[in-house]
Image (cartoon, rainbow, N blue to C red):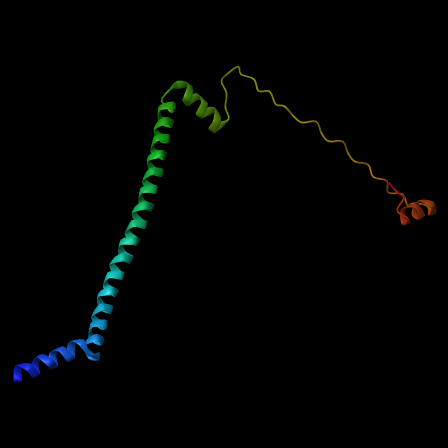
Length: 127
């Protein structure tokens, strides 16, 4: 008899309101833990994608610098870079400078308009 009452008490406890509340609390704790792991995994994935993008950019920059180094190791490339950086030339070279023609000055009429010109301007018949 004691065993039967004990089984009923256990069943009523597990399947009753208190048991469901305890199960809901346990579920919430596990769900929060799972959500935290999900957030960390998503953050790690975003960081990995950003790091891979940075790596690709750095590799591209490395290739460009290596090409520039190969170009500068030639005498022609070195001469071009010196001419570009320091604006110099060899002995005997001449420089041609092209200058734009100056713009003509605009002359404005500063005299006072007479009566007739003021009337024409008032009625809107001027140019």
